[in-house]
Image (cartoon, protein in one colour):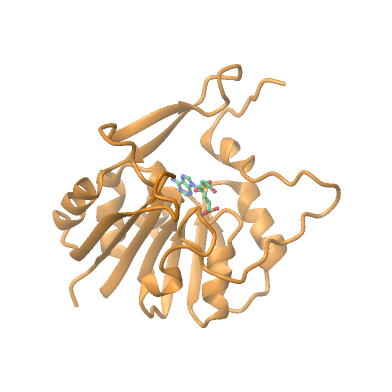
Length: 222
Ligand SMILES: C[S@@+](CC[C@H](N)C(=O)[O-])C[C@H]1O[C@@H](n2cnc3c(N)ncnc32)[C@H](O)[C@@H]1O
């Protein structure tokens, strides 16, 4: 059956589908994983010790719940109504976490809230133009706050927005863009928006022949 999503929210509604019958079981929440390789990478300590955090593009909400269970007050947003509905089904009532169905830039531009940490684990930051997103993140971070991001390492020499057909090559035309920036490009955009202590690097996979992870972290001056 050709895929037919007409919009980005509809496209993301189909991410990590439940293939079994009945209510989908919640995923385990026993670690905070930044990378695609289990038990690899810095874990939650990459965020420092925030009191409040905003996750951009949470989907299932595992990382948000992990942080909330360790005492952080977390707001987790996602563009997809289905992802947020599923996260609420699993985690509603978990102290310290709230889920919001919103587009990242819209939310950042309109919320009066500020946060000690804003993070994205292969989430909205990968799918949003950094030139639009980074200034909005900067405005919503408290002094000393941290912006932390992980996503796939870019393919060497192929930088900037990468377009894909979201519904595959036999489905309805839907453009999905992913911003693939080198560590140097991330350092430039963060530095020019007033971030300091910028650390952008590729974390190699456990087997260095495999795809690594782009890790980005930067702070707002105290
Ligand atoms: C590849 S998934 C990753 C989800 C989750 N963080 C994880 O690691 O499994 C990307 C998520 O980002 C969300 N997303 C993409 N663009 C977004 C945007 N502009 N605003 C909010 N959420 C967005 C999608 O709906 C999707 O749930």
